[in-house]
Amino acid sequence: MSFDHFDYKGARFVRKVHTEESLNHAENEFEVFDDDIYNVTYPKSGTNWMIEILNLIKHKGDVTKTNAVSIHMRSPWFEKVVSCKHIDKLDSPRIISSHLPHHIFAKSYFKSKAKIIYTMRNPRDVIVSMFHFTKILNIFTPPDNFQDFVEDFIQGKSLYGSWFDHVKGWMQMKDDERFFFITYEELLQDHRGSVIRICKFLGQELDDAQIDLVVKHSTFQSMKDNPMSNWSQIPSEIMDQSKGAFMRKGISGDWKNHFTVAQSEYFDKIYQEKMKDFNMSFFWEQSS
Ligand code: PPS
Image 1 (cartoon, rainbow, N blue to C red):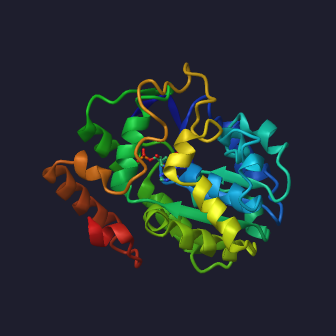
Image 2 (cartoon, rainbow, N blue to C red):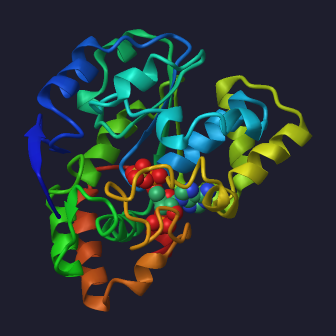
């Protein structure tokens, strides 16, 4: 995966989007409030879907309120250079996104009562989603071939570093009452039930009609059709959606259309090795 990068504490970042200063600020100086809600993911795992869901829950399904601000500013990534000015405008409870690995996350979080929702996705579908994303976002040089792209992912040469380290790092918090984890595949399989579980975790009481609105406005098609959610507000010099949509397919299992049998077997072998001491199993391990 080719992009102008630098490494910070074992993870890989995009120059200009991040700097050593912005990461140092995020890790050591950023002030977490007790009522903050953090939407944490490895890239391409459902970050924007969760932004939409969390903001709709906050506003009890009122899409006119969530649509007041474009999705890229509604729940900014606190580690990015540009985000400070957007974070200052958030009202309480702030919903803030991050792709940071656990070991670089804001130190002040660990002394706070703030909540984290961590969304994971089948890494093979993460690879595919990222592969297509590199063709539309100007920070990337489009990849030569899929095989090299998979190899870079395996070696942690992707944006934000290793998927394996990210998941293992964050799942150390799985028994913490401030931490809720969910998979993209669970969201797809039971969208409404997932919204209800998230509301329960957040202590938000929504009635059935309000839950229905949250679900209705956070479906793939609603978000794809919504200019405040489909990233069409971003100038085409930065994200050129004439080459492919940000809201691309929104399905599980698209990897089957991209991996050869040999690539799939190879990835499976690496996955087993890297996850062998990790005693949790995920949805995609049964279905791959
Ligand atoms: S990013 O750039 O890292 O913030 O991307 P992220 O939002 O994490 O992931 C983008 C993928 O999520 C899909 N998506 C959805 N799928 C289903 N339902 C909804 N509502 C939804 N919203 C976003 C999006 O299409 C990307 O996946 P792919 O596989 O590329 O379609």
